[in-house]
Length: 141
View (spheres, rainbow, N blue to C red):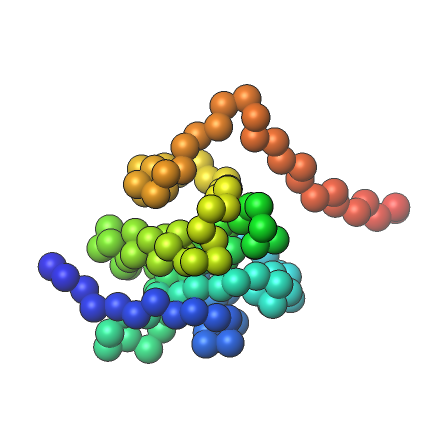
């Protein structure tokens, strides 16, 4: 069954509430405060997916980059009701084909959907990828 969709470029073409709703469906951003979502969206290139006949955003992704050496693909999410319809593939395909990302190293961190990203040349890095988690402020009693 073919589904008609539109890729949306730019956070200004999406409502924050729509982005937050999608991020609440994830294991990595389900508790991210709205103010943090707003700041992350302001400082990223954002992309969305709308399905024809639907008023809501059904997919979202962000790219963070210096546009010279590397880009980081993050927060890729498709609404649970629209998964396995090719929308994730369409969204990632759109992003990786952008001229401003051509020739750059693409990075992403995910524990799932590896076969989706492998279609676009991503591979699992063994022994090299590192991450620093944000520190949490402690309040003194």
